[in-house]
Length: 243
Length: 336
Image 1: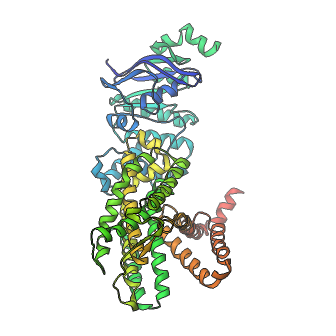
Image 2: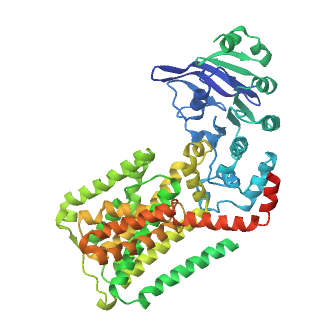
Image 3: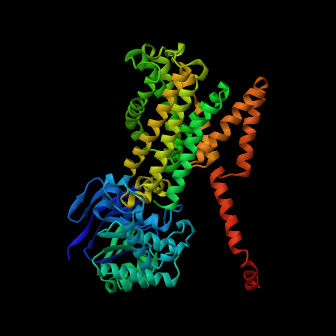
């Protein structure tokens, strides 16, 4: 497997705090790669650097074989790299259908077209059906429960037909039934060729779902490998349990 | 055509018809004069809403471009000879498009800031333009003001052409807002207002969308400035770039309902006549300002989200109550 995303000695400091330090890892094409580590180990910062929400102080990111010199979320999303946020973020005042249609990537001249065209609505409803949200299609997204917002956010990033999706804690604060649903969605989409990079604290889920697993600690890669190998790595146990 | 579309067109058509008929029915010059002023504020508020209401970027510099439009038209009289009578009004689209185009680089820089910073940055624009008007003597005649040629309209219906020009601008602004709200551009703008960072992560071209909305908004604003200058025939820096006009337009938008189609115009239609009425009745005692603010306080107390959204909520609640009225007892029983 070739790497779809390659992170090369990435570094980022916020004042005196080194959030990410000489961090390198790869996301093989077609994989569900996990990025785990204790709180404050730099996972979300790494996400922000990869997706262009923050500028790295050092290092480089390669996506689909091309080096990303000036990371910018809009450009990256249009090249097929997109993300969700740790706290579910939806367009609260828009309906579910509008939320999804807003995420369609279209040429600039399409801006004069109708906001939601019939075939776009059809596609949206299909996607909402897969996520069990179709009954709420015309509801304001702000009225959804937190778990439903997580599902909607996940569905939203799929509208742009990405190649790589970065999920930031997709199951945090979500009830067990929805966790199962999210897991199922990831498996299904992955089997159809979509690559994932997942930050997740639910270790059972990570062990079931992800391969390889990358462990961060203090902003640096501690271990990388198959879930079983990583789980039994003494350095990893030490970082998680020994503090 | 859907029912909602037909309903909006009927609503717009009725408003346009009533608006056009008004100065032909009412001849009192002072009332038509209030009409011109009301339409001007309604246009400014609607244009402001098109950018600030839909994107959530609170611009306090809009009136800078109102002033630029006014001065551009005034200066054109001196340097290009744009005719008299109705002719100068036909030059307005060029003035609007030009001023808006010239404002784009400034907007592009200003839009690198957000929230309060954006409001302050745009507010400085207002004072920059005012200072330019003071100091570019050769063009603006500075503080002694710029005199425009007196329009050659019949004295009995002198206000009418300006009324109709302002009405045309308001209708154009409302039409634009209507189209934008139904288009993908509108969806992009609302997405920006709701969560710009998320929108960027989804690949929404946020900068382009904001600049288009800005351009449309400024073009209308500058045209309104042009009509106003031609109407008054005399402009000076403090009157052409007046922070109070800016505040008025913003207040009217909030009063009527920010982000809605008709809200800003409704706000203007409530506030401007009230202000003018109080000015004529209580003008001598300065009490009119107290009255003006009282109108405002009452509306904000009773309808905090603005007239239109509050009314919409009330209607929705009533409908909901009617629908669930029969079921209420069973629900209470179920709860017990």
